[in-house]
Each structure stands twice: as structure tokens, then as C-alpha cells.
Image (cartoon, rainbow, N blue to C red; front, top):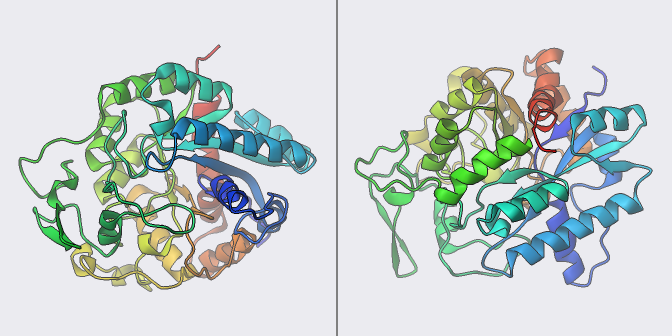
Length: 396
């Protein structure tokens, strides 16, 4: 099997470069000690990498942060213009491939930077942003997140995590029927985190999109921007489904039936996303994976995983393939892609970094996936949705 092209819907490389530079480390995109750099992308067979601008309401002004990271992104594009070029359409990706260049698409992880203002959204569009993840883990002017954070930070590399976030990562489920967790003296109701169709608790208050969020959906569809529901609450997912007409994506989310983490998608969501023509990007973060299932018949039930640390210490290819197999079984082969989340997590990784993606392709082949199926997962499904949305907007 020859090299299979790669199109990845999510990485945190830009924000991690900024983080390292703020600590006084000389870090650039061409070659670094992170999981993505230009040399590694070429070795891994990449054609397109989506680079996220990451903002956090709790750390500094999100608009200022987003503009700083956008500037960093374009400085790196200019510095490496012989090797990579920014794109806003798939036609540009096609031209870059013909010229032997990598392509870089800019996304915004967390609509916080827009402050609910459509003018700011349009300014980000003019800056080249073509995907917006409506929330991160903070409630903002657009919507509620799936894993809300308390306003208490702790230090750490990259994204800070709250006490609630940590508890959720230990396996508390959004359909926990109102269970509360004792988190350092604070009682947090876990059953109230979501009230979508997949919630088991009745009578919960709806926590989906807000008025500004609905306006953003309409404007993003008009402009030709990808709507990303990763991090969004379950209610928010179904709000997007109900109030849009075009495909949308879950750029870096896995299957909750396999790994009972609330950031993952239920089977119902996966089916709805597929019916709309969208794509879910498989996330390589170990806490969103399950202990490898080994075979179709060995899939662990969500109930067996709830409340347990049932994720692998190391992100193995087997664990990734287990998620891919379940997600494709549920959503179909045309609705699963890659959203690695590289440089957004630090757990050990079997393939080490993006240069090892062809090893994952080889293991998928050994697991029984055909070349055509692997091509779909690695790039064709993402390319299809990107082409429909990015080359199909109505903006002037």
C-alpha cells in the first residue's frame, strides 16, 4: 500500500507554539519537538492540516489572543511559503498539491473571541478563518459547552483544566440521572450538564444555543464557514441539526458508546451527523478512547465504562482503530475522518507524532479495512465536506 494522503480537521499547534514562545522558548513550525511540524507533516503524507486558533475566556482577552495567534499563523506561512500555503477553498488545496505544497486551513476553537458579534465573525472570515468551534469548555455568548468548567484554573502545559473537567474525564456521564460528585468540598450536579434527546434525566433545563448562536449558524452557512460541534453541549448539537441545512462537522470527537466521556458523540448523534452529510474527526487523545476492543463482538458497553478510568495510558493504533470501526459501523464509511488533536494533549502515542500516520494506515489495512475505506477516513471524507462548504458559500 502506497502513501495515503492525510487531511486532519484539528490540531493545537499554533496555540502551543505561542505558549512555548511566551515561556521564552524558540519554537517554529518548520521543525520543533512537538507532534506537528512541517518536516513531520511531509513524512506523514499530509495534504491538508487545519490549524486551530485556541482561546480561553479565563486566561486573557480572547479576541486579543485570537488575533495574536492569527498573526503567528501567517508569519509562519510567509516564512515557509515554499513548503506550505494558507487556503480558504479546496480549489486552492488542489493548486497547492499540484505545486508540491502542503495546505493550511485556519479554524477558531471557541467562539468566545467573537463576543456574539456577527461583525467580528465576518472579520475572522476576512482573516481566513473557515471553521468555528462554537464553544470550548466555557459557556459563551453563543452556546453552552458539553463539559463546563468552574472558574478555577490550575497550571499546566497548554490548555488549563478545571476540577469539573477532571471529574468528567474520570468517567462521569452526562446521563447520570442527577448524580453529584464531591469535588474538593464542592458539590457539582452532573446530571444537569445536558438535556438533549440522549439524556436519561427528564425535565432538565435546555442548555443549547443562545440567540446569538442561532444568528451565527445562519451567517456561517451564508459565508461558507464550517460549523464545528465538538465541545458543544448535547442540546447544542441538536440545535445545530435543527437550524441548519448544510453538512457540519465534529472536528475532534469520538464515540461515547465506546468511551463514556461526555465530549464524545452518542450513536444517535453520529447517525444524525452522517444523515446530514457531515464528518466526525477521530480524536487521538487517550481519554476519549477506550481500552482496545479487539473485535467487533468485543465492544464494551458504555455502562461498563462509566465511572471507570477505562482509557488506555498510551494512545495505541488498536485503540484508535477500535473507535474508527465503531464510528464507521454507526455513521458509515463516508462520515468518519481525522481530527487528531495533535499538540492539544501530552499522553504517550504509539505513532509518536504526525510523521507516523502511514503506520496507522498500515494497521487499518491489517485490521480489514480496504484501501478505499482508508482513503475515505484519511482524507476523502473531509475533502468532500470541505469542498461542499468552503467552495459553496455565498459571500462576496
